[in-house]
Image 1 (cartoon, rainbow, N blue to C red):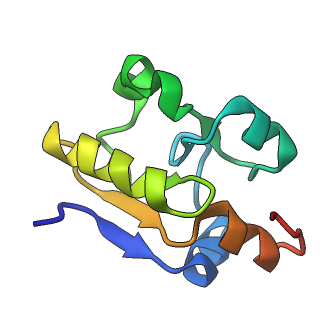
Image 2: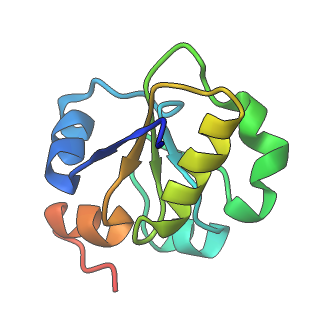
Length: 108
């Protein structure tokens, strides 16, 4: 059973634009080239290729939103973290491709 939730891009962007989320609550697991192409401010880059080494920096105190390009890698990271006892995780469905269009940016 999944130990995390999913959030629609529209609901996620409402939270981002409200200013209620800090950069340590939005974890972007794409690679640096993808990040440089487009990313959200606030957010923290933790590329999947080196995720295991950086994952201990993820907050266990606050809700954390995991995002990637389309929602596949972020779901895998949610699974990985939940298997290691992390809670309060949310996968951003559709990833940056969906989120960026709400911000007026064509990702793909």
